[in-house]
Image (tube, rainbow, N blue to C red; front, side, top):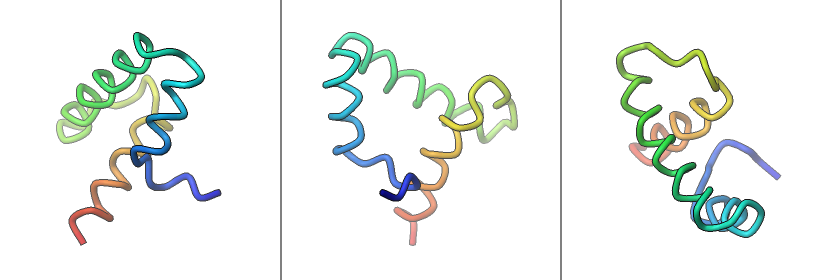
Length: 61
């Protein structure tokens, strides 16, 4: 399993494991972290940051 593309499948996995409520918070946090990534303020969850960043780069290609 590659962990470099957090696609809908991974999001669904998160929903299945943690529940819709937590999944929504997870998605919101990703959006927020995505914003902070551009400013260079990501230190809390580097692993969560790397996922969306890598997927964004692959999506741009």
